[in-house]
Amino acid sequence: MKCPVDTGRLRSAHREEVGVRLGQVYGFVVNDVEYAEYVHDGIGPHIIRPRRPGGVLRFETGGEVVFTTYVDHPGTRPQPWLREAMEEVAVPAGFRIVR
Image (cartoon, rainbow, N blue to C red; front, top):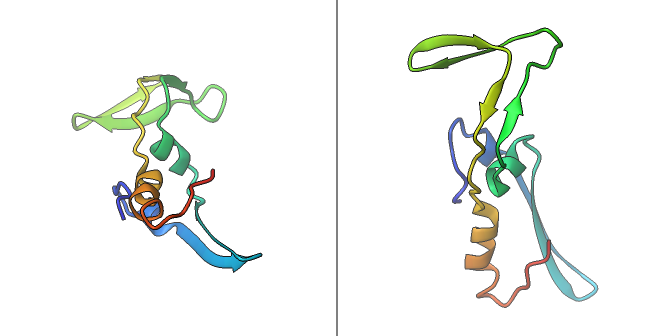
């Protein structure tokens, strides 16, 4: 599978089903990891704020711990591994992709 891997959580969360109903073959793949859509479709620039009012964000960068009240995130590019896999396998086999 072409799924991007960091910890492996995203890749291990795929569930799929294939079957026949009313003479039609169908199949679907689901991923319930909360960030799956953002990795697959990408996300534009956005601000990240603490969950609690008055809280701070803590993260490490360049080996140093940073505390801040917000992060101006530049966004991420799409990594459409599911669509690419479907186009490589399902379309040549004669299937139609429906979202």
